[in-house]
Length: 130
Image 1 (tube, rainbow, N blue to C red):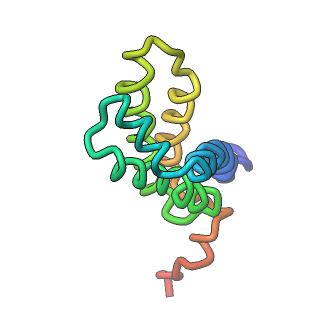
Image 2: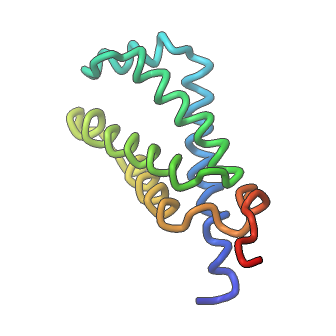
């Protein structure tokens, strides 16, 4: 391990959180209806419910990941979203899934790394050594 290893989570949080937030804002601006229509066309049951869940993960979850708040939980949700996107959308249509695979790898990495030392979560953690 070198001196920068503890800060790897920050760079991964910025990359993964930033891309998810960008996509989440687009879905939010397009509206729940447009996202639900897409999900329905792909064959998802209850597309409106899943649209709300997806937009929440891609906006609120991305902001939390960027700030380092509950990173492991949100990254787990993001990994599930990317797995579903690859298996249910990209592969059946024969489209490229490099971005989704990269985001899946980044999300799994964040599950392993957690918040990291440069996060808001560190500010709220109590010192249990006293």
